[in-house]
Image (tube, rainbow, N blue to C red; front, side, top):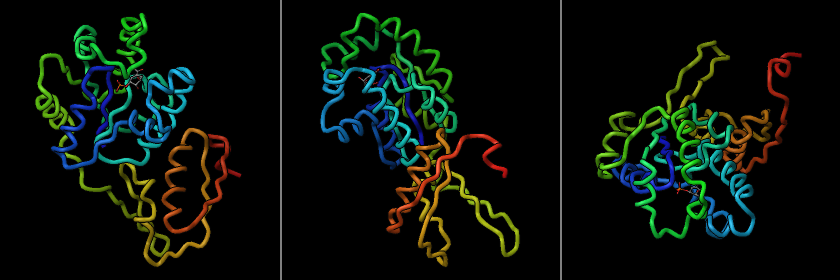
Length: 243
Ligand code: S3P
């Protein structure tokens, strides 16, 4: 998975669509997922319930998408203001599409879909977020003066083509041996990796608050087997692991 972040007008959706087509992978825009889930536009959510409510919806959607999706994912420009989102992004290939403030405003002139464009705080918001984008980015792509194709080329050069599938490492403990499956989004595909001989009748997930989104991915994968897992949420830390 490649994740695109950056300020409004950086070109996340345009570059993301081109990049996904080139890699032959799906493209997901988290604002579109929010709109589909809510049955209304981002502007309508801001208008009816305010920015705070939008940020809660955004955090939930972004964490779910990062846990489950594959391909190219574009995050709304403000999603990185959430510390949980920033923590989860640490495990991903994140490209920061940077854009000068003037260029962003030029690209967005006449846009009526982004409520924050009406705010007089854009320069402050821009400065504040810049360091957050830089904090989580593994690659920074300067978009000013570049074509969509040039930006997509730079991202591919930074991360290479996407790997076909997860890595599987076998832990050889004889009859107690097991496979460790490592890859982005594998939790949401859990049932693909179960040994064929295993026919689970019940499932029980032990989790803690910070990885709640991953536990939800595991649960949704198990539902494909018509299992409704019981979930136990325990406090984080060593004290929960030992009797
Ligand atoms: C926002 C950016 C928008 C959208 C919402 C808020 C922001 O997405 O999520 O209007 O806070 O910067 P884009 O970055 O795709 O424009």
